Image 1 (cartoon, helix red, strand yellow):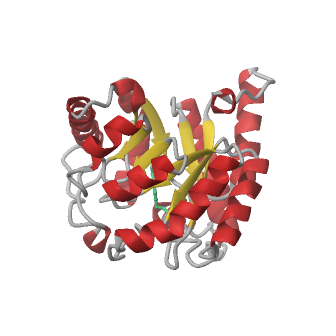
Image 2 (image 1 turned 60 degrees about the vertical axis):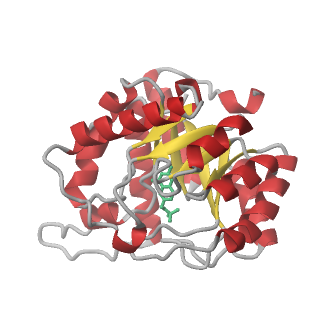
Length: 282
Ligand code: PMM
């Protein structure tokens, strides 16, 4: 069963929801609302990774995320911490986070993998070719899928060398990270090859620019509609279903209700009437 990871960005400048939940209480309530809508995992982040964004001081990041992680974990949620800083990852694990979601795959902070190994937390490693300040500098590929699979395979080995077994690892092709337009679609078509590596696979397409670019196509004889948030969420629900069918373990989304509806319909189509949620019983 593909799980839904709901996004709780505690940032002033995230790609689509920056500033909405900067106040910890607003972020906690948002997380609880996403959980009530069906998110099995809540991904709390305090540093925006939108293209062009600068790094945040880990102390500021922790001030933003730790109260939110603690409150959501105490409420019984399965919490993930979206961070590239080892110190923040360790502090969040102490506050109750059970998954460290590092979009840089442990590359941004060389101490990341060794630091989280003893915490027992799982780790999501994203495919990454450099900081968001210069997001598309590495967007140069001969074969996107082969390169993503090879580079993530190397991160699985680095995690193992640091004491994190592959059973604790989740892999993410890093949609939008060092990838433009069609390169993202190619990476999504390659999900089965990533799944074949062994670890669980996480996919994050939610509201991303490549979806808006695809939606911007003008209908024959018509006029292009503005690509607003609702249309990006609809597109995200579709890509989440396709990712689920390709073998993804979880999808990371802003609009949990829309993606859940889409996944339920897909499950019904495939002949499964029950919605299981493995992490809830953990
Ligand atoms: N994308 C963003 C942030 N964190 N984490 C994972 N694992 N995968 C992603 O694709 C991903 C992520 C950027 O999106 P946001 O600014 O809208 O949260």
